[in-house]
Amino acid sequence: MKVKQHTIGRQVAVTGVGLHTGVVTTMTFVPAPPNHGYKFQRTDLEGQPIIDADVDNVVDVSRGTTLEQSGARVFTVEHVLAALVGLELDNVLIQLDGPEPPIMDGSSIQFISVLEEAGLQEQNALRRFFEVPESIHYRDTGREVEMAALPLDDYRVTVMVDYNSPVLGSQHASITDISQFKSEIASCRTFCFLHELEMLYNQNLIKGGDLNNAIVVVDRVVEEKELASLAKMFNKPKVEVRKEGILNNVELRYKNEPARHKLLDVVGDLALVGRPLKAQILAARPGHAANVAFAKKLKRAMEKSGPSHIPHYDPKLPPVLDINQISNILPHRYPFQLLDKVIYLDDTVVAGVKNVTINEPFFMGHFPNNPVMPGVLQVEAMAQTGGILVLSTVDDPENYWTYFLGIENCKFRKMVIPGDTLIFKCELLAPIRRGIAKMKGEAYVGTTLVCEAVMTASIVRKEV
Image (tube, rainbow, N blue to C red):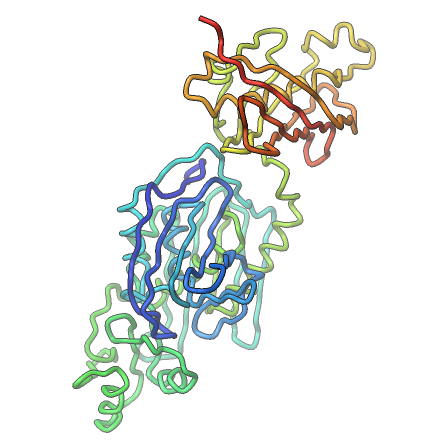
């Protein structure tokens, strides 16, 4: 799995009809900054409202997953989200000039193709996975649905479906690595049974349904009169049923294409948890209602794992900047080189790490029998972290100095001692003007805030 966040290299678009609304819509994928996540934007509505791809925004799961925020809705989001997850993209804005993404051929493969055409762009931020800490289960006895997430340092999905149908029967599908999504799952199309068609049609759904974008499974004898009615429904001169029971002789791409599409839906719906997952997902007879209910359960567990505004540090992952790269940007050296690595960096926010050990030179004289890191050095380390952010705004940071101009509202909330790992976060409070930067700095040990201050700094070009 990718360890750094990714967006797309450029803006790309697709146009097509929505499966349920029947509205022709252009959907545009737009690059987005780190930690943006997935967001939809209805450009056809006043104010062009944003709808976060968040499970708590789900308002309908009848034959698809519908999101609503601030009065704006977007229908049938699961196939698009599955494509983004399958390519391990983290930050994309999805603009729509209509209410529903195009259904295309009923799968995710055409979304995959256009996103790959845009190119994947690595970003200066580590992915913040939700690593399932213990088994999480969901069960709906009425629908005989069972889902589970088991701890795993990877993302694997296994789906079992059983429709009590002589045509489909029991089917399984699985991927052991998310990189398999494109080749094994993305091209699998949505489907329904013939007996569901009239119900869906009467519910004002599948207005954009066509035999080119959905598989219709026929598991009973169909009279000519009904075939004529179906032809009219799909605006076709004639429809047929083959022996295998697929309407209009549509060829399946895999024998277990329905199960594979259910896996696609699971991946798309679980994207609404809000962070990439590390888990073994097992799903028996899943549907959108169960997927969303399970996603909500996962999100509640994720929220208990810690506040999202605190930088997440996973020592197993490579840094955005290592000590050698930091040394090329900052002029500080021993014993005042106080920043070990940078784990996040964008236009306005930086996060860094300082490992505090008993071998720090200041412990020799600062309370030697009761070692406590001096507060002024905590601020200095935080300022060096902020210096990385400020110097990242110029093309040749090695030719600039950063100087402190002021410190305000500085507070030390808890002692820092040997063995602690300090996580620093600095965020610009306003755009840098005339070389002056003002930022809010915070230092954490775990999830505990130990130090904070508002710092002002100046970047000055070195004299040649």
